[in-house]
Amino acid sequence: MKRRPKIQSDACALVCLLTFGAAGCIPTISSFYDISDPGDKRYSAGCSMNTEASLSVTLTSATNIVFWGPASLAPSNEKHLNIMFTVSGNEVLSLTEAIVEVTSEAAKKPFRIPVTTIRRTAALSSPSCTPLQGSSYQAPDDLMRRTPGMYHSQAVVDSVFVLDVEIPGSPNEFSVRVPPVKIDDKVIEIPVVHFVRKTRAQLIGAFSGSTIG
Image 1 (cartoon, rainbow, N blue to C red):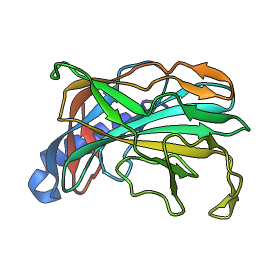
Image 2: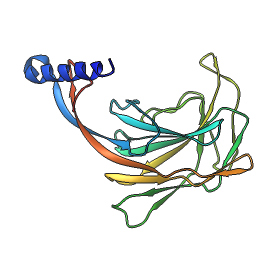
Image 3: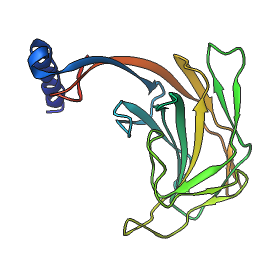
Image 4: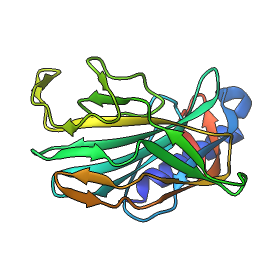
């Protein structure tokens, strides 16, 4: 049962290729950044209509960090990564250093990207999407804690704090290091996360979303 969607997708792709002119399908090659680390990984299209990977890492019983992206933003083609802290309890979170370090083989030394602002919102979001309505901003040295309230007529379970990071250049592989964070009185280390570019063939048209391989 788990393989049936893949078989159906491949069948659609094959039909589309065989009837390319009549069906109006357009084969394209797209690329996305996958996450090579094990863990709670998910894949979605975000708002970019392309594959986006995300990884959730548990820091405490009430706080996670989620890496989502990067995604290319039109029309500049800048690549942005969302690094998000989700706080669901009464813990208080703070950065020990307001930087994110990006390392790639193409660069001679790591990029130390300053965190100039933190966006507070009520839900996880893709870097290819516009910020959710009701988002607010705070300084990087401000404390992060859950703020009870309502969002779309539902009680807020998590408060989400977003670091929007632009990835320099267009590396095939890179890694991201976030300095340790302080949760209440405890310093928590965050693992380095590795990204690798992958390509895939995609058919857009009558069978939009079908992929080959």
